Length: 290
Length: 159
Ligand SMILES: Cc1cc2nc3c(=O)[nH]c(=O)nc-3n(C[C@H](O)[C@H](O)[C@H](O)COP(=O)(O)OP(=O)(O)OC[C@H]3O[C@@H](n4cnc5c(N)ncnc54)[C@H](O)[C@@H]3O)c2cc1C
Ligand code: FES
Ligand code: FES
View 1 (cartoon, rainbow over the protein chains, first blue to last red):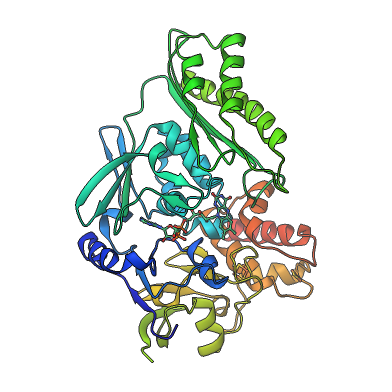
View 2 (cartoon, helix red, strand yellow; view 1 turned 90 degrees about the horizontal axis):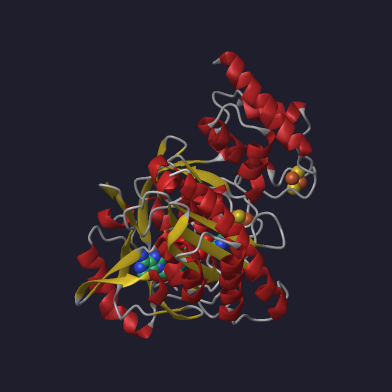
């Protein structure tokens, strides 16, 4: 380990250059807040021979608002994003999901980009990002491309990033009038634990009718899911009991969870329905406020 | 062996050190700079005993690489008392017996100070949430929360 290199480039091009030349062997690691990476290094799961700190790259630390469409740098920490009050007014569900990660100390470092790239099926911000309809911009040796969040992962711990690609930022759609999002997770404790189920809902309402809906689940499958059948059940409804029940059943049907000490398969499936209904209620309440 | 040279500021003083890429700030503070006030318990971000601030943000020093501190402003427990005088939190922790073995205390103090810099009138719930990443196996937390409330009150009175 004495020869391990640490670099902190100022530009994306420099970072991508180093990363693409060496990441084939998987021994070069990107460092954002380090709240996953340093734990993995300490436990021996990860033993990079080069560490690229991306926090000196301007685009990755930027927060901008272009006429209501937010762009959030991949390495912006939770505590920093929280101080951008208007972001939380637009996307309270995304902010609450990111802010659920760890303690205040972890929030001083943990980023959306790190949560996404770590690719844990239980990563809290991922369902909320999917429900928001955000896209992620990545930069690699062949230039830039955008991906919807729901197609970013290929399995637990695995992403569809190509060799040398770095996540640059998240682009949120302009928030619709009378829309609202919410994220809820079920954990055995009240703080500092991993989700057994996470559910995010984003709805738009016009004249009491649901005109748009996106529903996403976390921790119930190898990767976070966009539940399109739940959206279909909600769109066009007045959120009447039957429509909500149909959407809840679609959530249950989408689950393909593991059995572990945090929750059995049948428990996770049942909780997904309950959590969906609660997140929906919260999203509707927010949508009605504007 | 190639070492990384880092120039940083710790408690207002310019500091230079050499480190390896995997060294954390915590490793360098305790092992090389002989600043052992910052405690190491879990090394995985769970306990908060290693809390410091970096450019004013509360972080776990076990989850920050030493090489990342180039040109940063680090504050540790050693910088808390000024000119031989306790910070108000150190005083109220003593008055309220908010420590027993003392291992969690430096981290608690650093975290509580960072809360009071943001909010001089936190509710009990806000204090408990803010300190949720600081584990204490001795006190049962109640005395710690009371000490933070007392410090907040003193700060408000003197404001
Ligand atoms: C005590 C504790 C509690 C936690 N609680 C939670 C929780 O409740 N919910 C939860 O979801 N997570 C939790 N986590 C995990 C972790 O904090 C989050 O996943 C966090 O969002 C990671 O962000 P980071 O910036 O620290 O990532 P890092 O550790 O810097 O990076 C994570 C991974 O992503 C890669 N990466 C980072 N940024 C990029 C990029 N821009 N482009 C390409 N690759 C990149 C890194 O190489 C690494 O493999 C917890 C961690 C700790 C230590
Ligand atoms: S030693 Fe850093 S959080 Fe426990
Ligand atoms: S006083 Fe012993 S751990 Fe807190």
